[in-house]
Length: 504
Image 1: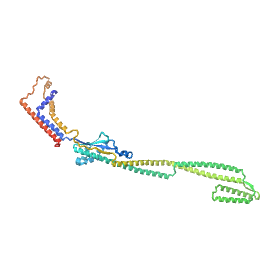
Image 2: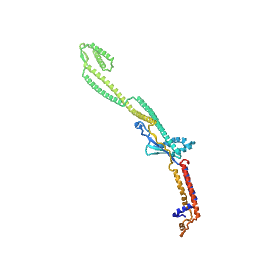
Image 3: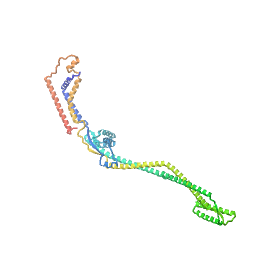
Image 4: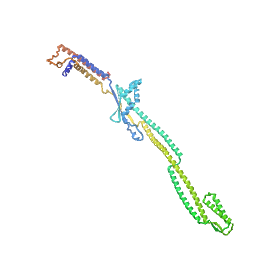
């Protein structure tokens, strides 16, 4: 039956007094047990370094637009990806001066997993700084590991920046060479097509067609003028007599025929038979021969009066022959112009058909040239960027605060175990006594009897110790205090040895 709360402390203290030896042993065991736990507790030591991200050096404004420098948005996140990468962790695991020899792949893999948990990368208040920390049970190892991790991170980032810049330059250079070949091929295709299709441009053909149409129009106008002139001459011929009376001997006609034939032979040396003067002479010779035949056929001799060609009629016939010859020439010219016009129209049709192909080839060439010129600029930027990274003028990581040696563990310390050992050692007997009193079924108070049996308790008889009992109890208390004093002395000795390096 539970003891009333108002008597619980009294009864618990009574149990401690009755079991002084057990309480003393419990105090010593609990105190030294917690102190021993503090001696073997794996304390965590953390070393921390601060990295400064320098991306605002003097080179950047000078090379603005000419080079691309590495940009970092989240400093800690990017650093975490690099440090947690297998490349960096494998280098850390192989540092035997830190971890000893890890012989098997399983040991190395387990160590890499542990390092991912022990290494922390975090942002600081400033966006240009971030911190790298490492936690270990050994303060020396925590310091040296943090230093190695920091140095390894800086070296790996420098190498990766250089490799990235070089890879970017090589990629752009390969693209430049590829598009240079494509540009040359497209240029050759365009030249080959133009060399096989020499019809000229659409503007040239349009100009030539316009010129031919103008020539045709002018020729038609000349033909109409020649036709009008021919009609006028024909009307004049109808009003003129072919022959007129003229006193001349027959030999005179023959002389004139001979003279005209001589002129005809002379003109034939330089001109064709269609030449107007040749046509006119041939007509005059024919007329004279007709007149001579008429005279011979009549059988009459009129030495004083003879029929001869009318000079006006002869002149009109000569003009008519010239006009008709000119009309034939104009007709031939018109036919030639029509043929040339038809040829140019066919040429225009072919140009129209080739226009789409030429546009396609030209567009292909222009696109390749534009991309090629852009890649040339990009390659130059990549080359300058590569030189900036190689010479260390781009994004740089510098150690702002080197790793600090951890002098004290984090969170739980040895002093906490020492204080808790003393406090819990002293409270342990009393706490166990409280639990024992609550769980014990003995009747310890009058209230328990009244509550259990529903009867009133008239009086209680207290415990009365004899003088011998009191002396015995005093001796027990003295022994208990002596043991406690010795325990405190031993406790203090252990603390002194721990802090002065004599005890782990």
